[in-house]
Length: 315
Length: 315
Image (cartoon, rainbow over all chains, first blue to last red; front, top):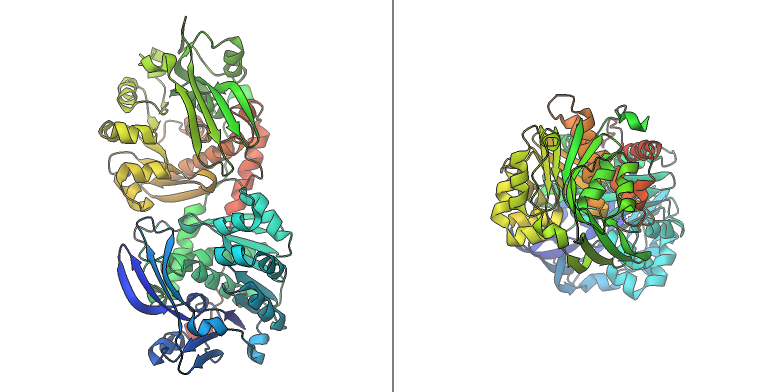
């Protein structure tokens, strides 16, 4: 079993109220891979420049993540993003984007990547996501993420690509922007009508909700007292979610029970990711910590029904 | 057993994308009382003008709500609020506020109201809330709501009043504004340090979370496809919450289990309230509907832990 992620592997420069990092390992595929690596084998499909060195590859290797499908282009630079978060930490302000090698990213999957049962198409141009999707001949579950930029500039292509995957992962602003529908439940129905079996709606510090064919599920955000850097929270969530699915699919159909646990593990992984800059926290995360926080999520949402004592006048 | 609510009984004019009402029964105490009336006896302490007639009083009477402590002042008009909601339905735009009789509201509680075990101080000037609180000699559980206006204009008084109650109910913007702390968990700790045993943070369509001495609980918003009018959602929530507590206190201490169920019933009642204008939906709500939706909330948040199948490398 292995989950394949296709997306950016990058350097980030980050400023938050808690400090800054001028050059740190980043990229959607990086956050996803680290998150998923606690549950299953992970293969990254991406591209970097020759500024991406042994130190960066060692982060993947330390978590047993396969980087055979990360192409390294001599004489070029890796994708670079610079962003700032203000006090509310909910909105990333982009300061600089340098696509570099990522501008020409158009991967031909290796046979191992094509054979992956679970594949996640991180936030890249939707035509490209669809070309990758068409190569995933062994996939049982495919998912995608996207962003406001593609909703505005390539909406039709994104809608077509959404029709080709099983799981769509967007934030609530993106869901509303994509559908033009302010009501989230209606917007979700529109997106699921395009084909996906599952829509995960990320809601920042509030948590995430999931619309499936059989219902609605909500997992809150973990009430952290210190959020150091929200970069990669959504991709870390996806890593936990799809990593869990890959480990537990066992040739069976996706069940609601399994999807719910996957969403909780996604929220668990994301809650750790934002405790430190970039992927620093996931690099030192342990399984006992994951299991401990999963139990806390259970506790945070649990209540028992009990017969209601009502007024005599209601009987 | 009876819960007492002290607050506005009013007329509202409402505009939402789903229609308008030029003059409809409103006011925080009204929404609270209707919500609580499904669980326990309710007593309203308020003031109206002589424009408030038999038709309006009949709404309370039809739900068995005691209005003996609603003063009716001849020759004066009731509190009036006009507001508009746009597509996102999260923000109320105030078009008009006429305090009328409410400007002089400074209630002397009847002996029955003083003896209530549970009392809710709806959104009124915090000095006034404190004067009422001091009269609640029989109260086991007291709660309050407030708003941005008092946070800005009477912050010190509000902080003092918060120190005199058991349960504080605010929305997340108000919690951040009151504490100057953007992180919700830290802000909650600050507010609980003033004295309250429970902080309920209303989060609009996301739901609500609750900070207690023993932990954190989250109840999502119900994923309604049509929200007709959010007016009174928070007060309806409080009605369900405190109404449930009053019915189940049974001389015992507030337990976390009881508070959690109360929060879920609060969210259930609020989810119905917003399905129609003003209190129209609560006026025709039934207990089987409440119980049905409570079960849906259980389903929406439920997941089972299962042993994690992890990578061999993690063992």
